[in-house]
Image 1: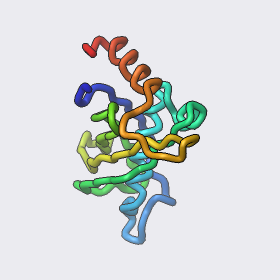
Image 2 (image 1 turned 180 degrees about the vertical axis):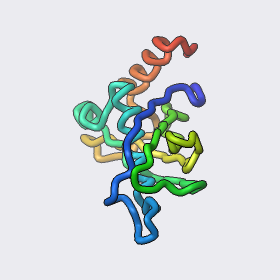
Image 3 (image 1 turned 60 degrees about the vertical axis):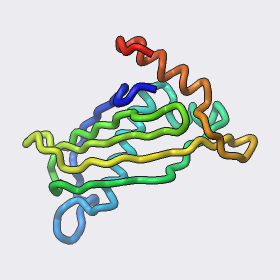
Image 4 (image 1 turned 30 degrees about the horizontal axis):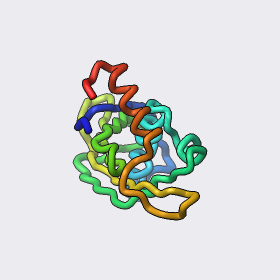
Length: 146
């Protein structure tokens, strides 16, 4: 397993509907922003949620941690980064949310997802081989030793 081996970034604007009454992004929406970054990472790997399901697996979230550093506001441009931290036994991803204009790190966090075999209706303690092969192929393509 390679630590901090793969990452994906995407940018988007904070929208009005993401704000709380104090005119900052409501705390729960940061989890949605993590999900957007996670989807970008899984798509980069070639194992997005549709492919995941089609190969017979689901990866339910079992834990999320968030550290709020500085608020995001309407109109801010956000750069969300997802970093693959573990991929052999479960899926662990770290997140960073930056204000593009200031370059400031606003929020960081992580999530853990377990492997669930849909057909067997059972948890697994290792990621499916197809997923590991896709990760390791991308690592080799990016020049990381596996």
